[in-house]
Length: 280
Image (cartoon, rainbow, N blue to C red; front, side, top):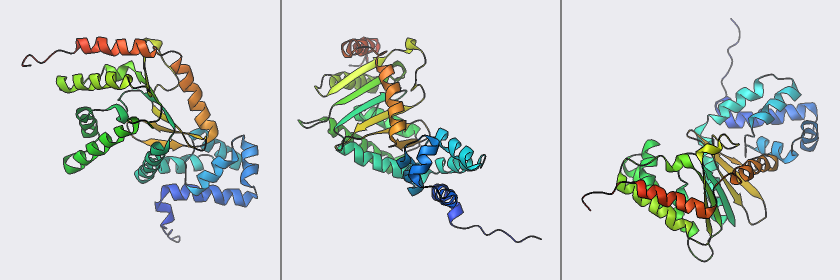
């Protein structure tokens, strides 16, 4: 009987193991981070951040690493395990929230749900319930989300642009009055001088951000970072090449959206379609 393999603590931490294997193979080959970046055609700083565990990178980068090192499937598998680790997503979200509070401007796209910065308490509660929150934790999360709205108020509020897929506005709450309140709040916020709101009609067809919400943050040092999110997870993206790729998709989509004035008329027309409570 062969010697039994010892399960180490490292192997039980997917994100750390992924980072350690990246560094180990690179050093074995005698490459610097800059040399690795030149060979694969990516910004070398991305690989430094991946080895530190600051980012996981994207699937294209991971596949390129497997091909470069001759390790078919190794890094893809480790990446998938790390991507399924919920702890690292919580850490990324906390870092994103800190950056959001420091951002000098924000650009956003919503594919299915209104952004937290524009949510009313009723809408936020329903979204969080669907996400599995309940009891005291639910109320705490609703309160925290409402606190985020302060970011858009005051003289020093940063510019905020959001593009809402029409699907976001075609998915109402079960509570008609809560839905009316939410639409009225969106219209109100669209009048703020620092808020630009556009609607992306469904009939524009497929586009580069069809499956993910994304927020771009312009930071004080001039950098732009992105946070993408779907129903299952989110990821903070700081690597320049990936952020630029997302920005190009965003710019192309913005050209297809209704103007701010047309978008306000669109939402006001939807408000007229919301039935009134006969008891009022």
